[in-house]
Length: 347
Image 1 (cartoon, one colour):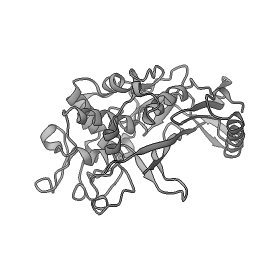
Image 2 (cartoon, one colour; image 1 turned 180 degrees about the vertical axis):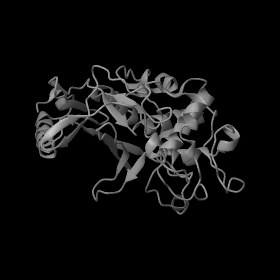
Image 3 (cartoon, one colour; image 1 turned 180 degrees about the horizontal axis):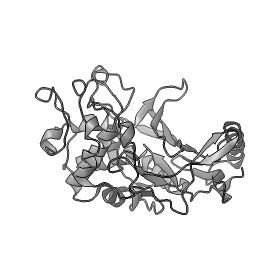
Image 4 (cartoon, helix red, strand yellow; image 1 turned 30 degrees about the vertical axis):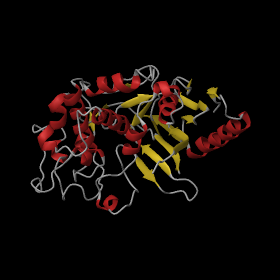
């Protein structure tokens, strides 16, 4: 049976940190975007948010803008070129990189981790019957623990690389139940995936993603912040306490950064999302089959019974709206709360 698939809209909303700056509206009615920005101004004022960036994309139109301030002390406003730390949204990019290697036959979803990378230090009491597989890392179903509090940040300013990065989180790489049963979020699992990207591609994981995602889409202001050093166009993170904003320091990510080091702009994210809705066939990241595979949950007991709610390959289904079902990823870090979501209609 043939299947038609239409992605109707993707909304990328970064609630970070109040006039709109550098708004772009090809195809979106100005009255609609003006109304949206007015409501967002009310939200950031009510919630005490220094600033925000937004990008919306359909197959035919896109809109991006900034509100408020990227740096209060320097009176720098958010615009479409302000660089925001995207935290765990990095995982979606890593998963795309893995999927592209699967598409070329260099990796397979069911590859056992012990076979493709025997040097990885992990424990699994059920390895002989229920081995940890590549798909389990992607869907957080390996049973691994999340990052230890003492390992959440890396403060030396020198990025960890290769096997050393994996070893830095190995205390979390212990299967607590048979892999492939249930989802339990594990940042260290994506540190392992970063290592696997390197082993399969022959490049550092961030350079590989730059080669297969960022450069083809001309995402020239997007990078992976692996050392925690502030750059001029970074949005500053803040806490709001006692009716005042307090700036917070930047820090390096845990492990190799593959779980949460992506930095991007509204302008670049527009390019990324246009590729997902197939607005530009010349700049597609994934074919139809690969994209459907990434949106499919493969490994949980629930998915084996037909339930497709939860975490797939680097993205998650959020059935929390009775009118629309959203798919995407969120993140939290450096006093930022990013997220992207899309609505999809299949028929």
